[in-house]
Image 1 (cartoon, rainbow, N blue to C red):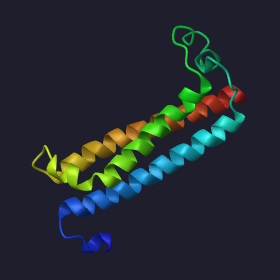
Image 2 (image 1 turned 180 degrees about the vertical axis):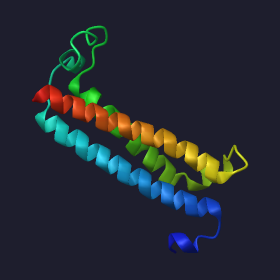
Image 3 (image 1 turned 90 degrees about the vertical axis):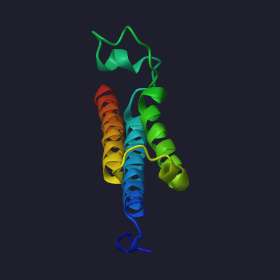
Length: 125
């Protein structure tokens, strides 16, 4: 069944959202893996990225680079396998508004993931 042949709005929007969330999670992981090759492996990467503000909270390179991609991958798996649970847990009357809100949150997580990878790349060069 293609996206155009879906029976209802939820199925169509769920397929589109699942596909795009999977692409975002994949790109996030690829960027984090590329940055991990070039970034310095230190106990506190925040101090290298911003020396004036990075001393208050310690965050290692592993957690700095891979926390957001892991959350995106977990969200993708949850959305992919929890289709019927999401259908039953609908809170708003309009399905499109729910998927739009989820897309905004997913895009924010994707942006933060890419931003962290780029910051780690700059710390490495």
